[in-house]
Image (spheres, rainbow, N blue to C red):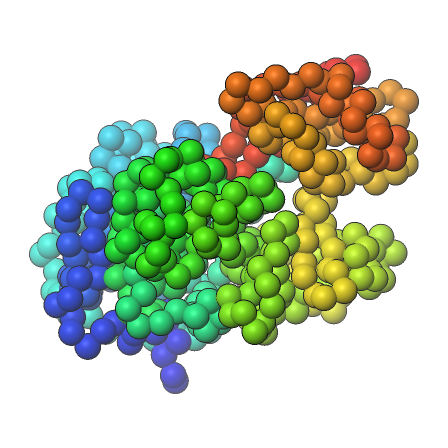
Length: 508
């Protein structure tokens, strides 16, 4: 059969001269394409030498390094399923993931070996290795003894390549099963849609336990045979200093905000850049506009999720339309996207409803949760994203929020993103989050939590009074709190579940 192993496709795109630089790190190391080829072969051979079952899971919780990326590629190469775990996860979370996924191999940071290995061995994992971010650890020591030649294991489109645990803001985390076909089809579509071309250089400053950094950024560069400028941690000044040597940058909104705070960001340092992409959390219109003014570049915002990789994107090419702030653009080629109202009917242009999708990028289900998987798909095979949004007359998609963030107040649907849009436009406001809390009369009411801009004062009563002149009364938050910062996850998403919990007893 035709080998659809994702690694084989990425390997086929390597440049003909394997001695050129593939990855240059922020601490001065250079890895050639030959280093990637040989390093991934040795780690793949080590994994295969362990005698683990076909389709076994390899769970990995390590700091970001080029070797960690090689471990991911080697897992694909050897035909196993990669399970990346956020470095912030603690004991109870790791116990759940290891117990649920039953990995044959666990790889952790050397500093965590004591407690992680205990959890892994108790759960029946046979092999635990360490991998430091400084090229140390038992994984590399053992791999060094292996041959540097290896034939990528044959895989079909439907074979499992990775399991990504969703953040689990409601109930237990679910493991989204992504196949070689899911990942490869999405990478190929994005290569064309985002105009990847010869000579492109990517700045990689994202974590690699998440869709954005591991799949969208890494696959994008590798499938194009592009050099990567690798940052273990995001540093706004050092990243801006490399813009002259790069053409593509992918970030979450927080990274753009931090770069805008640097005086050295201007049109001159961005003159060689081709594309700035933002995703993983909503980009404020103010950030979008300010970036355009300061750099002369329009950020391309896109939308995806763990279960589907990328779904929509603002256009790259001018002939496809303009990049519109506050929207996530059009469904990608080959991706179906529809909006359904509460009755399950197709929503009209501009009408808010539930977003449903289908396409070769949509995952095959949740790991060992057949009932949950069935629940999340419609009768006619569309995946219910859990996001709420609308499509305008020109086809641009706008995300209004998560369905679980929906506030039902006095029987009316209140969409937090709509109210946040108004609050964020007010003088002195840097950012806001609106959450629903229990209320004896209305069932639920909104509470606004606001961050003021540096040096600005925001008066909660005045803010609510201004909102009353702009929106229907049922949408107005009952209380407003001004705070120094909002709780966020590692991708910069505001953790509304924590805000809901914090204010849950306001009206009890």
